Structure formats: structure tokens, C-alpha cells
Image (cartoon, rainbow, N blue to C red; front, side, top):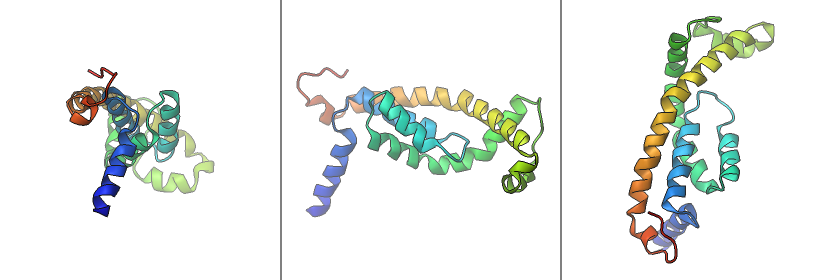
Length: 157
């Protein structure tokens, strides 16, 4: 009984005051930012987007943190795709990341920054369309849930 009440409380926190469209946008943005190939800043970016678009902070951060294993798994593939898509500029070997992070002030900052920009470009070209597809898919699913259909005075479809 206590477990069910707790579960209902958590569910209500995630959807409190949001429409299916807003919840779908929140989750798709959280996953989109959660897969960014940069090891810092995803939480701050999600918090900023939640404030700007008036989204549910708990939902966007939960989606961001759920995407974290995917971010780690896609980290190297995004760097490789970026290097293949944009072959100009300094080349980066896999060893430079372990060496370069420790010695960033000795001249390894530029190659790491270039590789990061290439990875961000690859991430945006791949993740942005997938986030749009996820948004419309989630919007359709959430709009059909009975919890959202019982709200009076609001037409969410």
C-alpha cells in the first residue's frame, strides 16, 4: 500500500501540470541533450531548456539521466563519425584523450576542441531528427493515455 502510494506520487510529479505535448517535448529534449558527446554540461543545458520552455524540471532531468549510458556508449562513435564527415583540421588519435586531458595546457587543447566540435556536428545531424521522431511518437502515446484525457477544459489533441 505504501509502495503504491509512493509510485503514484512519483508519477504525479512527472506529469503534474503538463499536457501530452509538453511531456513529449520534455522527454525528447532530455534524451536529445542527454546523448551530447560532451562530458559536462548536459544537466545545466537541460535545466536551462526547462526554464526557457517552461518544462517539467524533474521529467527533463530524468530523461537526461536515463540517456547517460547511451551518451557514454555513443561517445567514441560520434567522434569517429565527426572525423569522417569533416576530415579537415587536426586529426586526433584515441590516445590523445587520455594524454590530452592530463596535459591540456601543453598544446593538446586545439586538437581536442576540434574533435569535440566535429563530434557535436555529427551528434546534431543524427540526434536531432531522432529527437523529432521521438517527440511525435511520445506525443501520440501520451495523448491516448486516460490520465490526460480526463482533464476538463483542456483539449490536448
